[in-house]
Image (tube, rainbow, N blue to C red; front, side, top):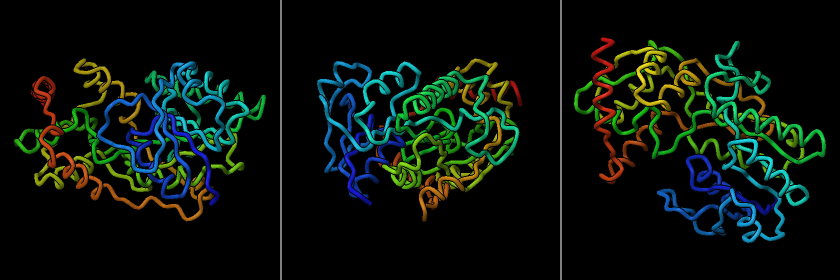
Length: 330
């Protein structure tokens, strides 16, 4: 692979941190622009770091001047206004602009499984997803009008060692260790896909600089499919306990008003079975295959949290709210 000048807008998030590392391993020149805030995902040696506010065009211009890049990977655009500013800024200055969208933009609930890239984009519940759809529409329009060299990538539920898939994070694990029941939405049998960020990164960096990907869209996920009960049980095993599961419907959790983000993420995303056909990304990046099963990722998660007490954040208010929910619906 040719050495490419790559720019990451964001680089210390769950997904972007692994992609930065993978780009270095692949031999690319890597520059990261972020606000320089503290992160528990430090950037590796060899990365050029520029501190600037991506939302401030003047700040970005001062930081980058007239520099051009072979690849710009945009992890920080969430609304059409964000995307519009980057289309204007990078037109003629980038060989390949890659926008991070979301698999939650796909039709919810999906009419057919597995999901493919041509599955309609329609999420009537979650504003985050509707904004990502609007961003995609703007990019597709720019490609059709001017040939703007964009590619859309849709991650699904991608995790690293810092992130737990259940609302409340470590509170979920601590409840299990205290012998308390944990909430799994629905009846626990809906299907879900969890993708390790290192697996995602291998496919993502493999797309860099390939003109055949301009104007196209890909999702990148694991092929492993688990029920939500299985996900809870795998985490319990990694934590050394059995998961005592209580099932409560997603709509009931949302209606209880414990946390709007919890309710929206369930009703707008996790309540529905979701798994993917990855044939397209495998054809675009020959030899790529997601390799890390969730049981191994769960061990990484528990070990990372146990290495530092400050990481094991227990939310007393959420814990009490979960007790009330369980008591009511049991």
